[in-house]
Image (cartoon, rainbow, N blue to C red; front, side):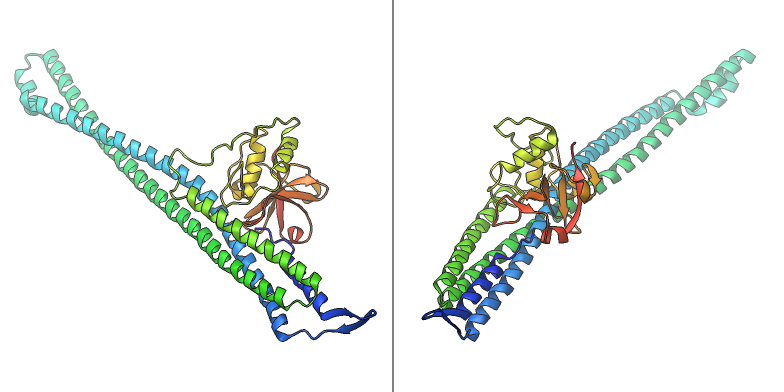
Length: 386
C-alpha cells in the first residue's frame, strides 16, 4: 500500500490555522482560543488516520501474498495430481509383475522344475544332453531372477511415487492454509478499516462543528465527504474480494490472461503498456483484481503488459523476477517500479519523474510523482521490454 501524503493531516492544519486566526472588524487580527476539545479531536483524527494507513498496508501486503499463494496452489495441485497418477501407475505395474511372478512360480511347480537339476543329471545320456539340460536350467534361473528383480524395482518405484504423492498432497494443503490465512488477513483488515473510517467520519463531524470559520468548515466537510466515499469503496472492494474468492482456485485455474482491451494500440510493448495503464485512470483498487473494471497494483501492470502481448504473473514478487533489473537512473516509460522491502507495492514508470499505480483500497488508479514517500520506500525497478 502506497502511503501518500496525508490529506487528513493537511486538512486538519488548514482548519486549525483558520480557526486560531480570525479576521475581525477593519482588519485587526486576534488569536482565538483553541479549545482542548478541538485540539483533541484533531489529534484523534491524526492517530486514527495513521492506524488506517497501517491497516491498508497490512491488507495490501496480505493481498499480494494471496496472489502468490494462488500461483503456488495451482502448481501444488498440478504436482499432487501428477504424483498421484504416477503412484497409481507404479502400483498397477507392481500388481502386474506380482501376477507374472506368481504365474511363473506355478509353472515351475507344475513342471517339476524345483528338482530340475537332479532330473538333468539323471536323464542326461551324453555330454551334449547334459549341456542342453544345464542351459535350460540356467535359463529358468535367469528368468526367475529377472522377474524377481523387476518386481523389486517396481516395488521401490511404487514406494518412491507414494512418498512423492504424500509430500505433494502436504504441499497442496499447506498452500491452501497459507492462502486462507492471507485471505483472512485481508478481510479482517478491511473490517477494521471500515470501523476506523466510521470513527474518522464521527471525529470529522465533531471537527466541522468545532470549526468557527466558514472556510475551515468547508475544508472539513470536503474531507468528511472523501471519508464517506472511501468507506463505500472499502465496503465495495471487500464485497468484490470475498465474492470472487469464496473458494481457492481449482487445479486448472490461476492467473489467467486478462481480457484484452477493446481499443487498439500501436508502438513497442513498453509504449503500449503505458498507454493501456493510463486508460485505466480512475478505476478502483480492489484486492486481487486484474481488470478490466478494477485492479490491484500487480493486476494493473499485468493487464497493461498483457495488452502488449507479454504475460506477467499476478504477483509483485514474481514480476520482480520477470525482467532485467535496472538502476533508478536508467528508468524509461514502461519500467516496473517496486516499493517496500517485501516488494508488496508496485507501479509503472511513465516518464517525467512520474508513475502510475493502483494505490490501496478506497483509492483509484492514479498518477503520482516519484518523490517523497515513493522515493523513501523505493526498492528497485525492472525492465520488461525495450
